[in-house]
Image 1: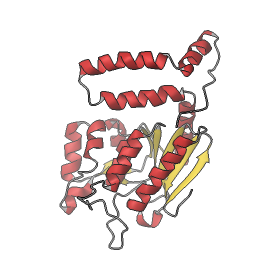
Image 2: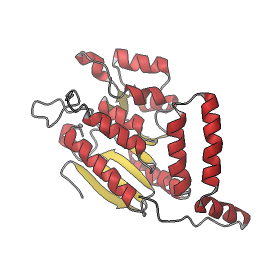
Image 3: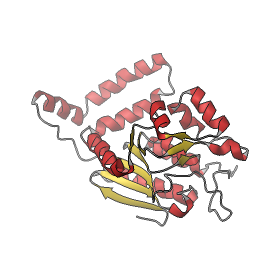
Image 4: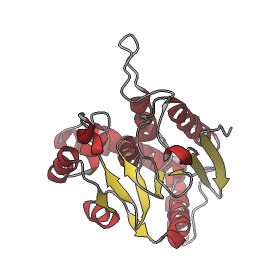
Length: 264
């Protein structure tokens, strides 16, 4: 399924999805967005995959944002008002809705739309030399498309400073803010990503899938609504085959044998 701009490969139970535009610092355009969406569809459709790793090719950037070159194929600033489904919005929605955990492998700067990709992922492992930022205010706009995801992972005051001043932060600051889970030297990046994916592999696919769905729903609820919803979801999750297997394995002091098949 590999295309020129997005690569797909299997590494154990992880689907590795790579933006393959190193000459453009892995900038986003409509073709890249379509390629990532197709890769997520494929990963969800193959039961062997338990996680997705999203990264950029080369060592110049994770993703430098929208492609602003004159010969770009699709720009994040285009909105067709007869069909206002901007490709960046569609991509961020698809990452958020992915039923598998999505891990960002941040191998370089994550800027503008690339920063939005990071915020949409569930977890992130970053190089200690990576930088993160929203420089849009310096070209006369604001990081509008990625603000909804930024608001979910960044406290308001540092968010405002990033958006208004347009200055990047380093990996240590990103770790302190909770933007990334782990920061490592270049030589340890792949090992740390593999370690994280192996930990995901030990958890119940059904529990993760239903848990991600519940978390997304609770974000838009009041506290009282979320408490009521949690009770219903817990009862629903407790009735699954994997929950039964989890309880049995705990009582029998063995590792659980999770159901491999997933609904499509």
